Length: 466
Image 1: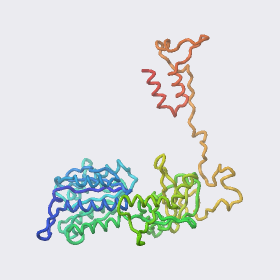
Image 2: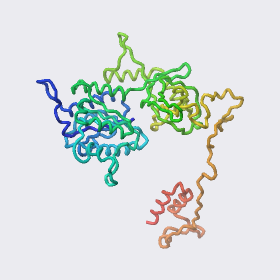
Image 3: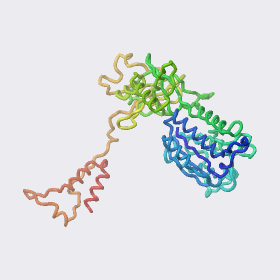
Image 4: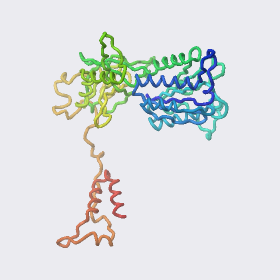
């Protein structure tokens, strides 16, 4: 799930923090925000390194500092290069962030939006105070408020202030209204206790445990098992067709119940897709206590040693890729998904898991998944002796006659060749006939392959006319 971070760079963020002990250096809220985001980047890089993150800064105008990337060193450098600006204007920043996300990911990808601010609402046009006050009396020229986002999003407002401070300046109610405008999807995160660097780190620690926690699971098929991680983390799903809908969570025990041909599943409707990554076994130290790698050399040696160990996840991935099949997995009570190999490039592929709708029959053409059985239970092979048919009601592999491209027949006599140039290009062949030049033959070859070669046909024809 991509993350877009909006950092407030207004002048109010440059004010020193009150209540610091005498003799100690007074940090600014901007310095605390930089320390908080730096700790956030370090945590995501260590445990959620596949996450795409973008950094934007805003005051009266917004700026894309670092586009969506996995290079957290670039994010750290962009964070350190920001300067203080003028007043805060959150509405324009949210509109700009929406455009950035739409250009990169479209309207179907869920995104997390983190607004880091001091809670100051600002004064004047474009500020949050003015935007909420004029929310119900906007004209067409003013445009709509950028919330809710045109894509699925969770909005987290991370305030460098305490809850009491937000209430005293009247910002808490406005920020809650901001979350409400995003269809209630989001949360306000504030510092607990005094506004100190230690408490800011505690706030980031609790936030990362809630949002950026990996999802470990066990992938099992019979007596074979492998520890894996699902990325991004699966979200709870609330079935809409049940009488008493309750959120359902994917179990950490993923049980493979069978295999199907890739053509039998085709392209089914799914709720979400996740990478299935094998977890390398922890290497025990000399005293028998395992721990994470302390440096790049130890990390590379751990990865090399893990690559030499047999892994059921790697075996499953290679088998599905070679055989062109999918594995049906049970994700919970009456909840299923499928595992398959997806090509990332010509030489690289990943093991993916697609989550179906909760229920026993998420794919209507397969009927109820618990009623499916192995091919050996049938007297005759349902796929035929040569595997040329499918027992499921699927579209045929061969194209129908009415779905095929119509042939276009072109005769040489139908082409009009300019008279002056045709005399020079059409020399007399032995026997008195004239042969067509190579350019005309090229046009005819592309004309016979219309409409597939439409662009090439026009290109060659235009070059001949010129």
